[in-house]
Length: 478
Image (cartoon, rainbow, N blue to C red; front, side):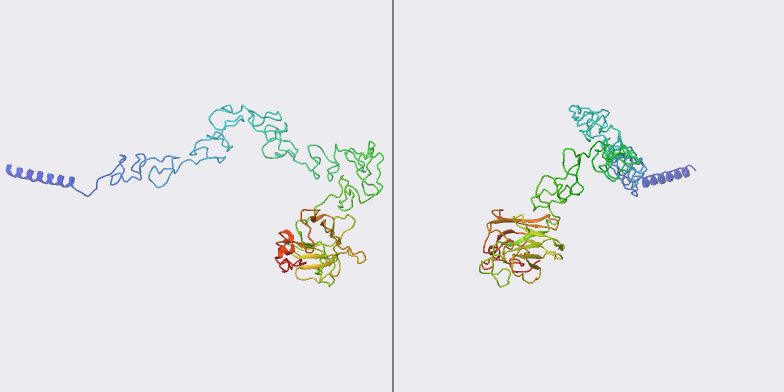
C-alpha cells in the first residue's frame, strides 16, 4: 500500500512539473514593446498605442482640449471640446487656442496688440497707455483728441465739435468718428431736396422752397422777386435800389446800388453770366472777367488734324480739279478717331484771324468713325472715296480768292463744335513748335498717332508730297 501511494504521488509530481514547464516556455505571444511605459504598446496586453513616445497619449487617456492632439487614440482630435468663441475674429476669445481676449468686440484689442494712447488696454496686460505712449499729444482743435493723445485719435482735428466723444447730430457729418453719418435716427424725418440743410423735419428748420438751395432761412435777400430768406417778404430792405435789366435777359445791370446786379453788358441780351463764351469775338460773353477763354468740347479727344497743306504747290494739283492753284489747293485733313460717327453740322474751322470762320460744316454732315474729311481752300472738290469725304471751304470767293487763308510763315488752326467749344488746335511756324513747310504738306507719321513731319519724309518717296483723304502710303482710311 505504501508503495502504491508513493508511485501515485511521484506520477502526479511529474505531470505537474511537465505542465508548468510547458506553460512558461510557450511562444504563442510575442514580447510587449512599450517605449513610453504607459502599459500600451506593440503586442502589449492592454492594447496598441497610437503614440508610443508620449505616455500621456494612449487609448486609456482623457482627451485634452486645445492641443490639436488625438490624446485617446480614437482617431479624433479635441472632440467634445468647448467651441472657440471669437466675436471680433482676431483669433483670441473664450476657449480659443491663442488665449482669452479682454475685449472680444474690438479686433484691435487682444494679447500682443500694440498699445496706443487711447485710454484703452490694447494689449490686455492690465495696464493702459503704458510706456509713455501718450508723451507727444498733437491736438490741433483742442478737443482732447488727436495723434498720441490720451483720449484717443480724432477723425477731424480741425473741428473741435468732431471727435470720438461728440454726440452725433443731423448735419451730414460723422460727428462721433465712428464711420457713420447721422446714424441712430438723429435725422428721423429730415427731407432736404435741395441739399441746403433746411427742410421738413431737419435740424436747422423748414425750408420755404426746398427746390432752390439759394432760398432758405438766413439766405441773403436778392432783387429777384423771390422771398430768398423765407421771411414772407420779397425784395425787402431796398435790395433792388436802381436795378435795371435793359436787355431783358433776366440779369440786372451791375451798379453800386443793385445788390444782385451781375450783367456786365446790359445792352446785349447775349452777354450775361448764363451765356456761353464765344472764343472768337473779343467779348466777355459770360461776365467772368475773361475774354475768349477756350471751352473744351466733349469731342476734344475724338479728332486729330492729320495732314495740312499750308501753300499749294506750283506743279501738282492737290484737289484734282485740273487747276493748279496755291490758294485753292490748300487743305486740312481731319480724322474721327472715336468709335462712333459724329454729327459735325455747324462745326467750324478758324485760323488766327478773329473775324470770320474759314469753313462751316453743312447741315447733315456726319463723319463716320475712322473716316477723314478734307477741306480744300477752293476749286472743285473730288468725289468722296472709301474712308474719305471732300468739300471746299465756304470762305472761298473767286473774286477775293483767299480760301482757308493759311499763312505761310505760321498760323493757328482750330476746329470748334457747334457750340463754339474747342475740339482740336494745330499751330505751326512762328505760331507754334511745328516747322512751316511749303511745296508739300505736313503730315502725321504714322497716320493719326505720329508726329508731324514733311510728307516726302514720311512716305520715303520725294515724289509724294501730299495725300489728301489717304494715308501716307496711299491706302484708305480707316
